[in-house]
Image (tube, rainbow, N blue to C red; front, side):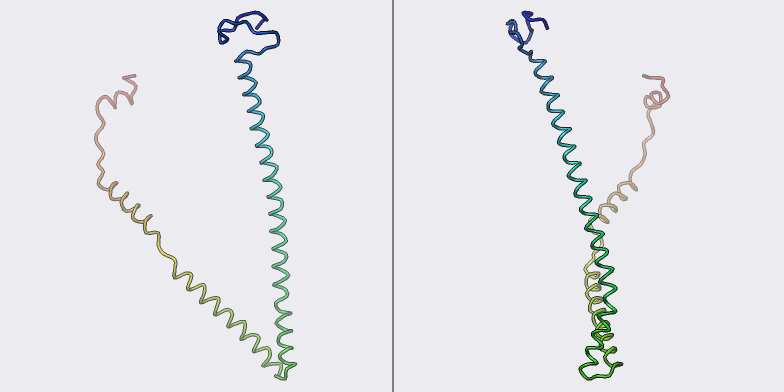
Length: 158
C-alpha cells in the first residue's frame, strides 16, 4: 500500500512511513508462528532420533550381556560342583547337588508362572459388549427402501 493511502482497518488514518498494516502484521505473525512450529517439530525429531539411537545401543549392550551371562552359567555350575567336591563330597554327588539346585529353581519359577497364569481372567466386559451387539443385530430387521430413496440412488432425483 502506498504511503498516505487510507487503510480500511485503520479508522481512516493514513499509516506513517514504514508502518505496517494489520494484514501485514497478521501475515508476519502467522509466518513467525509457522516457522516456530516447524522448528519445534525439527527439535522433537532430533531429540527422538538421539533417544532411539541410545535405546538401540542399550538394547544391543543388554543382549550381549545376556549372551555372556548365559555362557557363564556352565562355568559357574562346574565351579560350584568342584567347590562342593573340595569340601569332601565325591565329584558325582557334587554335580548332582548343583543339578538339583537348578531343578529346584526351575520348579519354583514354574510354580510362580502357574500362579500368575491362574490370575488371568477372561475379558468379561468385552464379551458382554459383543453379546449385546450380536443380540441387537439378530433382532434388527431391514426395512424396504422407499420409492424416493430408490429414485435418488438411480439418479432420477437430484
